[in-house]
Image 1: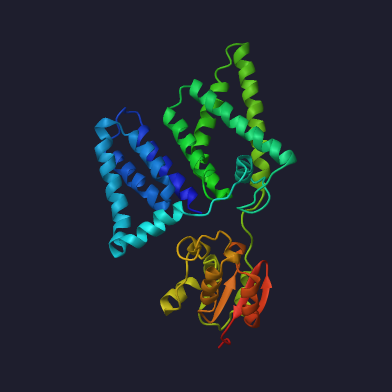
Image 2: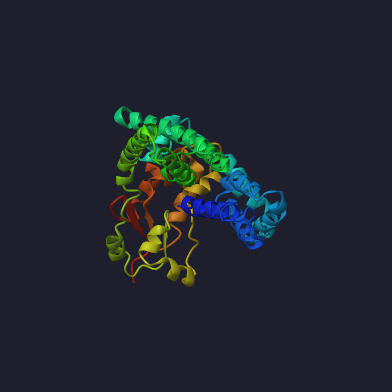
Length: 353
């Protein structure tokens, strides 16, 4: 989940440029902010417009210094890959992202997914009943928060960043729950400003009423978030079971590298020169195996690719439903299947030593 890292870098850069007692940040702070701004589109290419908005807060006198620092940071991280193969880098980082299959998802279902209310997968989200009402209430509450923060004379860059980041996640090809972390920091700041505005000094009855309304809004806010916060993200891996059956097995490939990390195999395999471990297995369909087909399980090119990958080592583990292994491919793998547990299938092709 890179969204949290992305948001931390973005917020830190903005604080460096706008925080502090002085109206103009020191050159050291501007340089540090520029380095973080340059990091943003590297962590997630969508961050390019967010980085541009934050960069503009440097002001005319500091804009060149901030932009130069961002360029150095960005170039230092991307130039080695660009020099190695510029066409492949442009295709994988930009063209493949823009060409990803898009699914017609209900906008309110996307919102519900950020809150942990929606059911279904990333391509068929739906929401109804109480969950629909809670999601609609959240949208309305965000609107109230923005209005109150603007009335409190908040720096409008936070409003621009909230609107921009919400626009990015709402127009994204998929609807993943962790995308909400991209707009959460800006919404958190605006919420704090709005709460402070509503809870101002209780000098008269109108102020007391306003504080009471603010307290009610906070309780509604917490009630909406509580349900989603209580729902776990992801699923536990059967680490003990995997280690038991992989004891003595040489090289292992998987459709989720977390499996190799959890079983303490990643570093040893990298050092041992095992077959290539794909970082984002399902993401490869966007580059060379899509051929205009959005469904991985119906894509014959992808089925050949994933079969060859899963049989490239002594054993393989498949734990991601989104990998899109078809029934036919599973039948071909069946003779090597040891078993399955907690959504993970284990295939062993070479006998353990």
